[in-house]
Image (cartoon, rainbow, N blue to C red):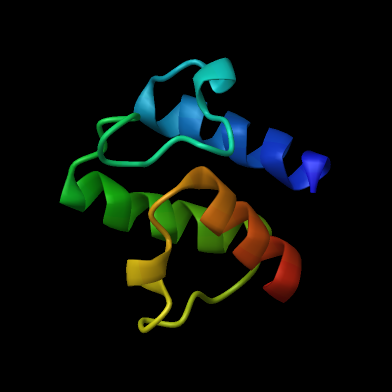
Length: 77
């Protein structure tokens, strides 16, 4: 999962101008990383493209923290 986390950190840092080090397992997208709703939707799309996965619409509300996305990618990628 560390490889997935590192790739996800780079993806977030590149697209949302945050430092990769600030993207750790415990961070929430809205409260800690300050992503707006539209940025969160874009993050989902970037993640799907980068990891070649499709995130089901009913799963998206469950993805509130970095760890949630990394675990999802690990289980479905």
